[in-house]
Length: 222
Image 1 (tube, rainbow, N blue to C red):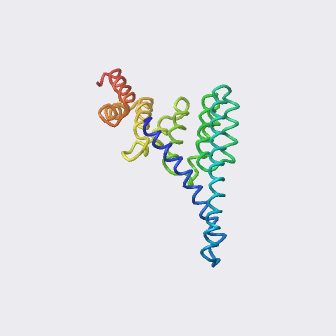
Image 2: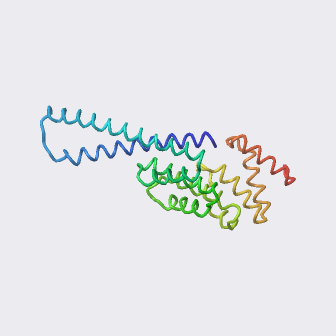
């Protein structure tokens, strides 16, 4: 799962860069697209535009990266203040950093005794069709984790079902949570089936496979 999260985070930062590049090209086209200019002038404008954009690009990423790191540091000392800093970055940051900040803010709220606030933030991510599905699915997974104790296990199990499919990036975590929820609903057979699948799947993260084996042993189904 850690490798998947690292892969997804790498993908997210590539999306941040891509978003910045696309914005740059759109601005250039809007300004020069309908103007016929000489090759020399175009070259001068292109170089100047690139240099100006490069400065903006690097400055923006450095500034937002610094804010994100500062919020992480603050959260380790004062979760409430860290959540405030993430909320500010979620509001005015570029799409990639805004998403990361919102997920961090939600996690801090959940750990600080505000599950309703966390759920509201996760729901906002889930409902945003402009966010890639893999991150909306991650928000759903995290929201279900927040609701494990007080939520309706049958309803949560139904919500998680699509994330347990073979093509889901979060299938292993979703299957593990689903097994626990199945036990809460009294469906031991479903839980055992999910746990055996995790225990026998070579792609299951080792620590998760070990937990699945322990649960199966506890249920007398190893």
